[in-house]
Length: 473
Image (cartoon, rainbow, N blue to C red; front, side):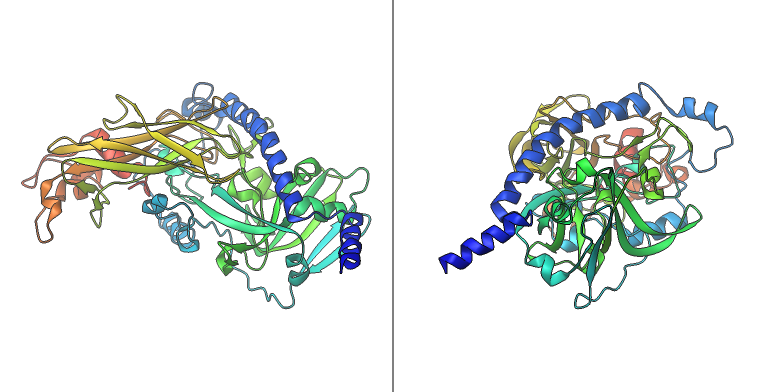
């Protein structure tokens, strides 16, 4: 038996494979590198499209005939609603949980969910490799694996926060996130086994989902540089929270790029091709910070920024999602993330950002996961409040400041703080009691937000909190 174990270990080493502990070590080392790169990514984004360097007025001079952006937050289209129904956000109240269940994890499905049979599935590794590979799902599952809590968020998170919305994409609020436990093997080890040839610079990942985008028929494809693919953190994943992937989450196989925006984690993975490059497909162009439709200085979206969110306190009104709490002390809980970077601080405001208070922060649940935080809020006896939260990481990064002038072409990477509208009313303590939320309902339409027998109109701050960020309530 000892002899067989020695032989097996020698074969594994000869093929460039790693045991689970080695993969975990790769992930730890990669997290350190990713944390530094995340700082550079944020600086590049701010330099190109940070509101202090570029805004909607600058864009209007560049493209006066533009039609793909709105001038209002109220003109959402039926097509956007259709996308929102197919590409659902997380359930914001589930921020109370350490791990996001599959049914509450955000989903962006660009085309259709493809049907793939695990029994006949094969992953192909082709291109500039010494040995092309074709692997069954069973073979992939036999490789050394790791399970990691990974926070994933869509690059379009917060698109609805922006007044000048890119309206031909998913109308995300702050709720396109999820932190699941993903199980899979090391991409880097598999590529080393195939043997990357000299001159190779890019690795292209192709999913089985096919559609038309920007006028071109295509499979969903993304790429990483060879250096990124070999960094040691990219996972070939076949399980989510201890179960086989659900069809909508990429069954039977996907990649997970921990610490990056979600578009990099290709679902329904069928092919990995190593190429010389440069390759720049549609999903690379679409997920770039740009000042205009054509921008030679575009900055690809990569590592996640820092962001804090709260689980709204109290109970919701069915239509407006206005929160209602009884007067007293309420513990506000939430999560904060920053990719591979550790968290420094979370602050909470109970007065629409006029003053800020430090929340109690706990440890992250993984190298690329999120951290819990809480704050005990003493409410006034009655009235309304707008709650906000914001995060800061240990590399000095912080969230965007609220702005109507912020702009980038596709409305990517917004981190303006979450806002939650809360009404304080003791009647909420007993079922059957009546609470007047007609003014909150009417405020959904600007023309109806006027004084009536049901009450005064909501002010601009309250309207912002209720309807500027769908998904935050």
